[in-house]
Length: 331
Ligand code: SF4
Image 1: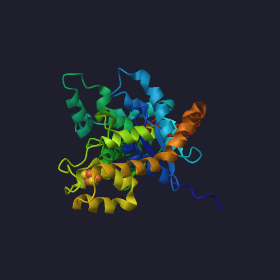
Image 2: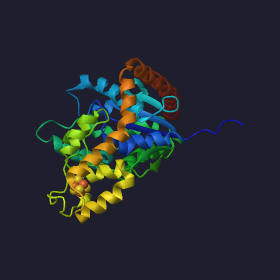
Image 3: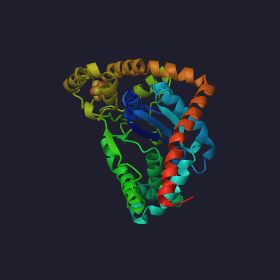
Image 4: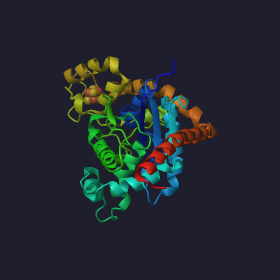
């Protein structure tokens, strides 16, 4: 009996930083590692997207991409099963982006809320680029080039994929059925707070990184934001707004109810609570950090995986482009 073809999923991260943080790990990467048991995962490092915010620091992007690939591997993505590659090494992304940009009405892009936010944040500093406006078109090309079954998303990302579907629908309407309607592959992923209590993000300088040492992690958690109303051990606390509690929920799952109850009852002090949190986080990350060190010492191996990944991705992408050109009656 021929093997049953597995459904394909497409996912990506931007190399705007040389390493991933625990928000990236718990919010996406661990989920991809789980999904590779049931799906053919195409895990892209979307370096051209990073240009929208790094146009004056383009020299950092390639090294960042290698760092992100190292984190992918450290987290447990298996290069035998999953295709790990850098977007710019598969030039078909650029060709499909150009063709999609011709079929996408400007109004669709101007309405995208993230474009408006980013444009407003540039006010007075720089002018919004054509690339920033066209970002969702490139994203649609990144996804549809592989004709995947779907894209793994958290609930808050669902609207982002709607434009990809609209572009696919419009293309299919103009040139005949070419692209699938991609599905949202929904997973319940935790949202980690950064050590200052805001969303964990490189730009807030509040992140704990996969590549951080156990000591660096301890220092960060010791200085983390807790409940400002809980000054003494016996003050009743409010764990829902406490960054340390959010780490307990993910990394100390079996004790999180006890942590919560004791915090609320004023039966636990923040110093001890942070100590337990540090132990749990470092224990959970130890095997990933170990693997990261091994891959870091094997740069050649990472580069080989990226090259092989790009070859595998290109094989699929070039087939799609043949269909696209034929549908559009282009040479
Ligand atoms: S006891 Fe723990 S959960 Fe409660 S406020 Fe302090 S650090 Fe946060």
